[in-house]
Length: 118
Image (cartoon, rainbow, N blue to C red):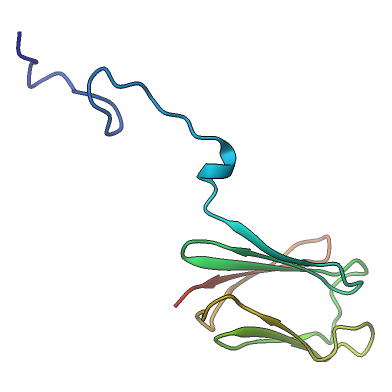
């Protein structure tokens, strides 16, 4: 008997009778962990995604008030922090990015940047 036009063939793009495939978590993740700097101030972590890069700067003693951050197409530059080793530090990106990031700060002293790839 032919299937009715009123009955769906499958769910979520599957054919009738096809079983759902589940992938392990590491295969579903679109993010690749690129770097993790273990410097004292700040600790730098970067993830490379399909369309964006996320950079986190963790300051164990809190975010310095005189911190200056600038973003070019290929790197993020830190400056203005008189204390610690973050004066004049730069972080190279794996590819060019847009220079207007989304910036998020949390109460634990971490700054996150979401940068769209060009």
